[in-house]
Amino acid sequence: MKIPAKTVLALSMLGFLALPVLAQPPAAPKSLLAYTPKPVKLPPYGKNKPITHLVDVLAAHKGQSSWTHQVIKTDRFDTRWVSMAPGEKVSTRYYGDDRVMWVVWQGQIRFNIEGQEPFVASRGFLVQVPQRVRYSMETVGSEPSLRYEVTRAGQHPNFPADNGEAKPANTPDGIEYVKVSTPTQPDKYEGVNKPYVDFFKDVVAKDPVKGPNPSLVMMDEGNMSNIIRGKGIPTPPDTNKGHFHVGRDEFWFILEGKIEYLIQDIGLVKADPGDIAFVPPGRWHRASWADGQTDTRLSFNANPYTFHAFGPDAGGEQ
Image (cartoon, rainbow, N blue to C red; front, side):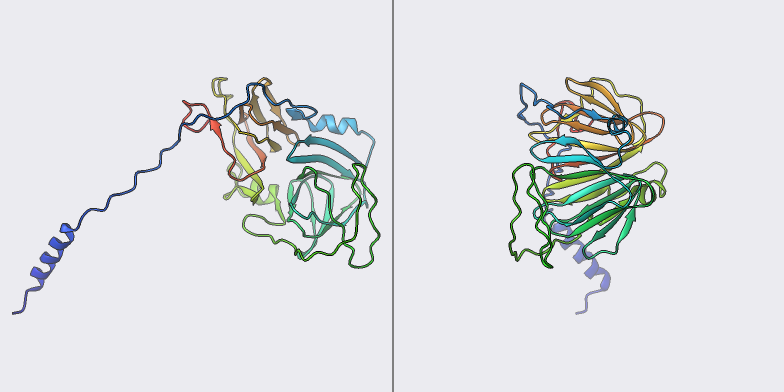
């Protein structure tokens, strides 16, 4: 006997309704509560400063074309301002176990990076080179170039010896260069990592207020740099302490506008374009866009998944 189509459909629906309802996993909570280690005695700043103002750095080297100015030196980071006179060059080199990154801030620098077309970087270029990739650079134009350089502390560059290049001189901290052979090949640009980002062209010119998406400009297992951009807001109350990091320091390069920082035992400080803000591990700190304009900071962390500890009533945010 042929069963009418309507009957088949009805029976099918009954079978569907008879199926057990699968349990849905509970939604992850917005934030978790934890007891987190925080030093009773805060790690000192040492020679590092909460804010390194660019105007002070430039004043210290007034009348000089070629100079280096140490900004941050920790167990993880080694950063400095570097000025090069017109025509001055950095010979071909590479880091064996970490990438290097620069923020070009004045003048023009021609970069030659292995596997990439040469390019000239000017103010606002965020340039990076992966580990074991050879690079060189030269100031071009009629004025000195100025760049902010970020490397891993304790790392020394390697220099090629494939074509009979001269042996580099020993370093002041007791490093002798010896000739070796190595099977280790150059790393590659992958994911968010690109030879450069032209901040003022690729970010500011595309949108007068919003930041880029994705906002990461550098990320691997041991590095992270992130563009944090937005419209300024009134200064939050001191009850908003922000957060702290367990065992990791953090610093920021101010690219645009003005950033306000509330730092434990330091107070409220303000940073302008070209300034560097730094916070050791274990200190409460809060960064906010200063009211009245669009503000941008470029953050640097040792790990893309750095643990953030907020106040117990803050809901995991500031």
